[in-house]
Length: 257
Image (spheres, rainbow, N blue to C red):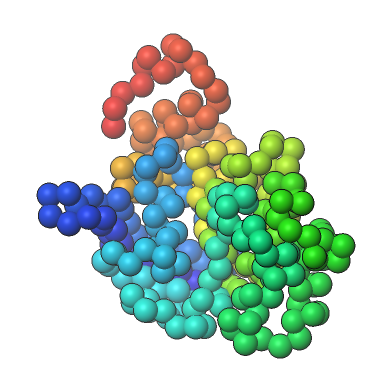
């Protein structure tokens, strides 16, 4: 479903140029859930933004659903590939009702039967028709993220890019959203790429996980190896130790990779 070869993303020019992603390659099968983990600034979100078309300054080759991607994308690409952003408070227009938010992509892509599609999308994310004419400020963080997921699904995409979709939510709400994403993936046969700094979150949703550091792929592992702490690289071992909580002795033993 997704093939990326030697992806490099550069910001700035000349002596101020910064390679945020350096020579990343990956393949993701249809229906698979693939995770990207790493510390802040490792380049994982930049990979998603390059795939989605939000970042233009990339080189390499990308192919999604059989379509070779260039700087300009087809309308069909934007229907088939949707993204859920990290901040449920910033990704929804504060002056639009839920109805307006869900209707906008239908208008852009000229899809009919808007009434049925909106009600179906709300039902799929566990929100009833009573939420339809509410504004974002009238919703909790978890409800806002459900609306963001509904907006992504309303176009019936094949691929959903998830940029830390639970990091701004309480732990109990995180579990609800992860279980929702898991169910929707199986019901719709979706392909996921999920970015997170939380290894437990990625291990819950993804079969394969790639670890990034300073724009590079450090290591790829299975969910089983992640859960069992089986790694090849020292950086990944340090990431696993750090994910278990602060330990002064462990932190003092860390080295700079």
